[in-house]
Length: 186
Ligand SMILES: NC(=O)c1ccc[n+]([C@@H]2O[C@H](COP(=O)([O-])OP(=O)(O)OC[C@H]3O[C@@H](n4cnc5c(N)ncnc54)[C@H](OP(=O)(O)O)[C@@H]3O)[C@@H](O)[C@H]2O)c1
Image (tube, rainbow, N blue to C red; front, side, top):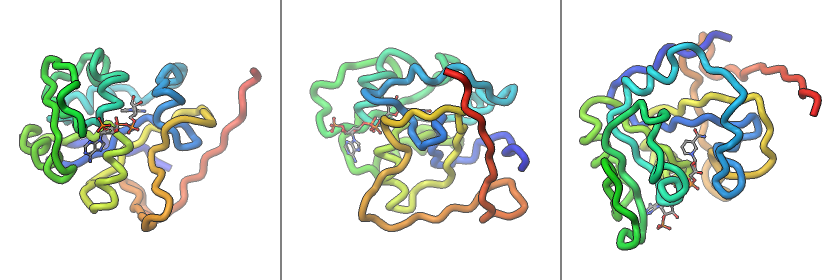
């Protein structure tokens, strides 16, 4: 299996996450302390710093992380949009615009601000809504060698339609990926 090509800036709506092998993008209570102890290919962070024009996130992600920190360890600067039903009590922050609108409208606003680069959706809950609406161009995942067992899933939508995907950058776009892990001694 070959690695993906470097990400390109093309006005895409991108769901971009590091994910545990068991499908969680955050631990319980938005815990992100598990995001250490694994490596990514050289230059990967810079790829996303260069190709991201704007970020769309939800209120929980903003309150738990983005409010105090910035994407890519502060290496990326740009407009961040936070979607909420309760804009009044959202704390103001530099480069952050609080939105209270339909998710489709939030995407339009984010893409305009991204100005030809990608709009990165940093929220599984918004990602799920956009997937159901057919508004996601790519899902870009870095699967970490870890099992969390609990937390916030990339995709959890009981009772909704199944979404099939094509695997990008592979000869067979519907190939299953073969992975083999060994648990480390505790
Ligand atoms: N692993 C990674 O690479 C990675 C990357 C980015 C983020 N994350 C993590 O992902 C987690 C985000 O969790 P989440 O997706 O459950 O929460 P979230 O999307 O950040 O926040 C959910 C909240 O967003 C608001 N919202 C969502 N859709 C809305 C809509 N259509 N209209 C208005 N408001 C809307 C609502 O806020 P109100 O209740 O205020 O209305 C909702 O309760 C965080 O822990 C974050 O750290 C992980």
